[in-house]
Length: 273
Image (tube, rainbow, N blue to C red; front, top):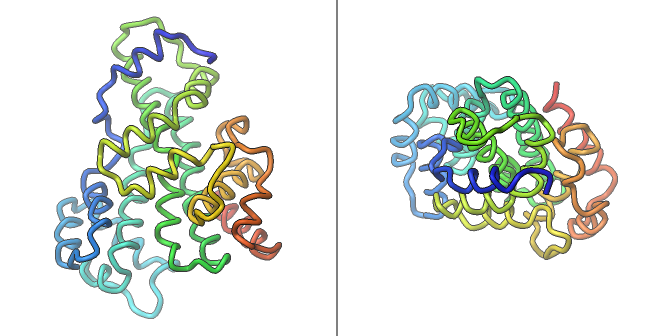
């Protein structure tokens, strides 16, 4: 551990309610465990946040999602895309807005973290489709988007500690990254459990760096492979965090070929454009 025990202690004292989720997007995510949820209910929730609703509608009508028919209202978009994909759009739109800070070093790392998370979300969706698991595409997008949520919490916690001046703290890049290395998995799982995030995403947060993983867990294999590949495209904040040293096990588990890997590379690089 390359940072002080005082800092670890102070991080553990921070409120778990630090803003890492938009309340409306969080409510939508929690609803995904209910297969009977109605479109009107999803529409009603999104419309609680008009700024978010506008962003979601704009994304739903973008070239990536519009298809042949544009949506004039949020209800139209939910009808066309379904609650899972709308939740993905709402979470993506709201997460981007949460990755900002008044502290320059924290803001810079947050921007890089958002780029990594956004690229992983797109990469996971792409890989789910190209590996023959289209039914997992929306889950894969959210799993890629949220697998490092512990890092966002840690950044907000350290920013709060720095502002309180309760301990002497130099917020330099090495300290931030060392805290990530030691604590982001445990904090990510803690946050997801606290907010009743569906268990599938908690499992991804818990095991995306594990030395050994369940090869039958397709969603986990997708996230692990995409996360590994993010290092190849300079989209990983801290290459030493990537485990294991190669992704052969994930490639074998997903039964993918060179074409799928090339598609993944193109889609992840497009996220940086």
